[in-house]
Image (cartoon, one colour):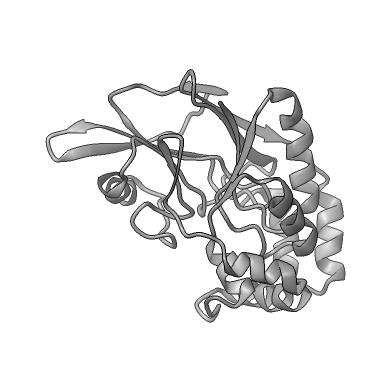
Length: 246
């Protein structure tokens, strides 16, 4: 089966539509979402409505929890707090309730797991090898897809006497074949707010039959999203960072 895997859409309607158009010719059968559907971006209702209608499996992200009122957002930075407050006010009640009831990861799908942050903690970041090794130790499956960092790539764990030793997947090829005796933590990247130096929207396709992951990027209309963010009175930095991919 071929899965379209999305993460960190962050209420960016233009980026989501560009991804869907780009992925349309890749023959996927199901859509999986790793959370942070809302927050930061200017179209929380439109994006939430699409995910509700078309995603087959969804796990919650930290912004989904904060914007729905499930958790406070006082630990967020000032821009994220402002965005969360604005999003809470903008969200239709039906969308807020749906976000409030999303499952926490890990969620098992056809022999692999979905999480937002890490297998052992849905809010924990995995930027570096030592953080990934803790995730590899706690992961129940050989393959876990995660989001949260907004960085496309992830980690591969090679067998080691203490378990698995993590290596960072820096240089990504468009297609990556999974090796049977290794453990993987893979991040499709952020649809709506990439932070890996590439401003293009990111996603991946996973073919479970042949064990191949395709890492994909696509351009979108950043200027329109920036204008919407500024028109909504959201912090300028949320608009400007979209163009840099950081």
